Length: 199
Image 1 (cartoon, helix red, strand yellow):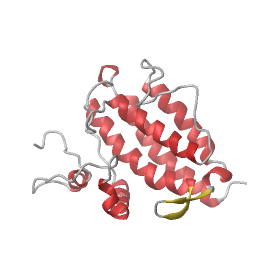
Image 2 (tube, rainbow, N blue to C red):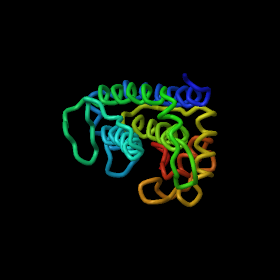
Image 3 (cartoon, rainbow, N blue to C red):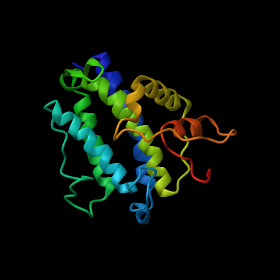
Image 4 (cartoon, one colour):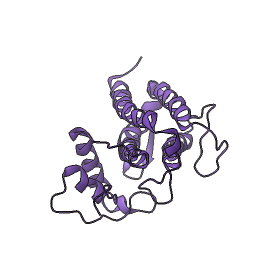
């Protein structure tokens, strides 16, 4: 039987994944190799990172999230793999897993104490889905606006990460912003990202 906690986790993941997938679906075919705000990473690399980081996290908990559509940023198994196909196959698998209370409710000792797989997917990997959605959009030349709820979530996450926000592999150091910067631009600058056309 699906618990309310499992339902909440799945619903939150699905909302964030739907928005990420919407950007993935709008990337022009000739822009997958375009550079993203993540230094050294193309749009394709960012999608690969999102997929492989979620798979890797679950694998560490003994959960197999692999599919028949590999897309690995470190050791590409198929450099011609369509990121759209790989993302949607992965997304389907994640929804299947998170619908299972035995997976979503699986407890483990994390960096911030005892938690569950579901909470981590929503908190940490949810943060990734929002921030990297913007990264992919920038690489594709799309103007992606984050919602107030998403900005709230990113701010809470950044506050919760504390100094770990700038650990290696998380975010680059915060950047200065113009005085007329809006909330999204200021928050992205805090996460080490410069809004295109703003210097």
